Length: 293
Image: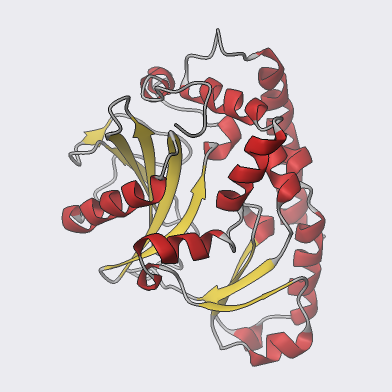
């Protein structure tokens, strides 16, 4: 295991220990902030019926079919392959540039961008994903959802970022269902993930919000309002009967591609600034005790 992977796992273990303590303390009567309400949702996945339903959305391979059926295949990043483990025969058939990721995890261990296959050591990449496939995301997050996901490796076409960035701008739409079935939306824009992470938050009318966590904020960004509205419309179509979800979209050369759907943003472990932002977002979750209306 490389030093960077070891450090990643060590830091993750420390953060999740703290989160685990909070998880034991939170309940429906005291959940007020965004993080607390997401932790409450994690506890709700102890119900096996809920866990199985949410696992479909959490499976980054299976959810592609749902997106295709609801909004169209043109929004889905082309799939190059899916496998139980990497093998040399499949590797040799892949193009020069592509993306490898697991269908259940997140972070450095579960994601790899290949920009020049001939500069990569296949055995090193295989070893990394052998470890990733053994990474028990259920024990990591306490989300029973992940017990029901058949672990896979996904191979996708590489989507370049603009302005020399390795990855495209990532629009994470926090979708909050209101009691009248309309939606409130907070748009989180991440850019420069592999260079220097910067992150802005916007409201549904594309006004910049005073919210930040992990990375610089209030950066100068040419916000594509027309495409952002399209992302909102697409996200509403994908919400179905869900009461809260974060639906991610990549913005690539004026084109939109689906990323993923998650119901527990950073496993209820985001550190917001100012601290009041945690309560501001928490107030937007109107249905504390149900995933689906």
